[in-house]
Length: 392
Ligand code: PMP
Image (cartoon, rainbow, N blue to C red; front, side, top):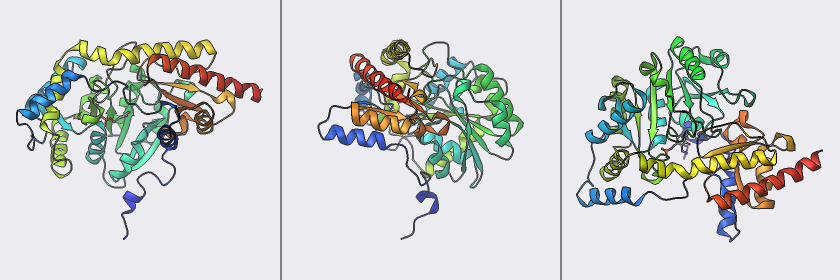
């Protein structure tokens, strides 16, 4: 039976970049001791007190269909948090709760784009972006941010493709680079977005993983709130990846329409998950700091370790990832990562799986304990130098 072109072409037809991840999992299953530094999954599970709140809610009966836009109290909690962190007045009418940031990305593109519209996104990008855009019926148009510019997007590159497009998707702090966009970058982006009547879809799921400086949302820049749909999630901030809880924050009329969309897609998020999320968001800074602490520590240590070895990396101050620049070896990120897995049993993501702008780089997820990470980076460095010696 024939399937739709849209679904058959969702991943663009080629490799989806996850070969290394799958191969590493198969090696682990066959008993090989692989250090997996691939996906952005915390090495600690959801905190027990969050799970207790989830349990209490479920036992209390919150197991039926939940309020579709999100419970009033969770929407109020998200609105208050966003208002406090950004200074932008925000109410529950600016918030719709969705089952994870990924569902938010999809819904935001359905809201912003008609079928066949151009939807811009910055390369390097989180691996699902092009497929999400295609799934929403729009046409993904990558806009390169360059290694030489610290992966900060440039206005002139955006201006070249913005006319006639419907949306621009950005992600700061960035996956895969760990880079935080400067105020200048965000102001330039917003200027192009407003001049061309684009929706700015701002993926801020790493907003609590800024290790130096503070998070800045384009929604808090002058005029930004009118054009911006912010994607938020508890996956990274509260180690709740499996709970599937996120939100979109935006102008009231857009949110109203997205709520209408949820009626026809997800039909809401389980009430006990929403209650656990509300508990997590109101539990205070100490809990968030506890969850963030390992990545803050490892990010700093990994930078020092690579610098000590003389391996270049993308200067960054955020996220649970670090990007190494392996161009001096003469290998592509794909080839380096394949051989690193085969010969040294370390799995990292090739830069190419996040777009062509990150070619010749590796994304290292800092998601194993400190000692194991340290050993893996030493082995990676050893492999790197075995190649540069051959290349020289
Ligand atoms: N955006 C980015 C940049 C991500 O890295 C991820 C998950 N790795 C997501 C969105 C989706 O997160 P979730 O659906 O778990 O909230």
